[in-house]
Length: 328
Ligand code: UFG
Image 1 (cartoon, rainbow, N blue to C red):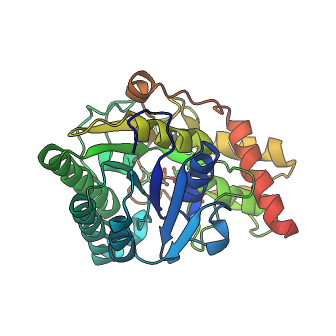
Image 2: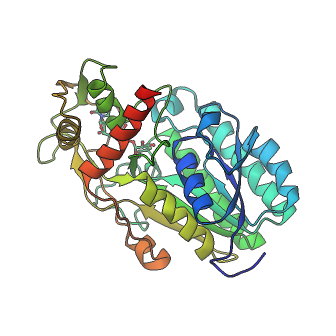
């Protein structure tokens, strides 16, 4: 293995058959890296693994951990349970599926001397901070089990990095959206706003429900920071090459601009040309009014620069993906 950042790396991507994992794998392959995807297909899709990646079906800790004996330059760890509502109803699935699995993967990395880790963390680790935008120095006080499990893994990574010299980066994603050609969001249980709104445009759903219009925001609907999945994916390569042995860095990834639920629906109307009927419904439990990222650290330290920041551009890529799927 060379230490030159531009050298190709031999990488393992856990969860590479999922939405963000598949886009990241595609971008890493294009950058010249060698990628092995490990995914148990519990929520991912085998046909989402990009051509050119080696695919091994199985659990990230068991199967992925053993494969590390082959010698890898790094792991990008996406494989996780990620539904906030489900995490409150079935915490065991999240503490075991996220925390226990990640600990076993960390142990395997240590055993086999895998030097780098990039971990998929989340804005949900911050809970509902009163201050906006949210910086990495904002206290992490998760309000749901999903966020709590991701924070626990972040803390474990900090101690492993210090004790064992691991070069580690956690990336805390805000609202990831958009698509990259044939790689996009297709969850069996869809809870995310943009795919749900586009389901109305594609005729799979009659209308969208706006969860609350009495928030203290400009138009009363909740505000989020939508980041294009390709910009997000590209931060992973920068994190891999920029990681330092013995250190665990944490970076927020967002655009720093908030859009309300109504603005998202309007953008989807503009992009699709569909009227998209919307009705106001009750607030969804646990939804903060505003979540917007301060991503200055990632820009300064990683040289990361999001390039697809317009809401219409993000929605247009998600819509192209939906149309591709319909035509298949
Ligand atoms: N929303 C609606 N109607 C819907 C779906 C969503 O009004 O049908 C609203 C939500 O109430 C929220 C906004 O649209 O205000 C965005 O909701 P998403 O479900 O798309 O995203 P979240 O902000 O709830 O969740 C995202 C990530 C989670 C992460 C969380 C961090 O998807 O993984 O940010 O707070 F945990």
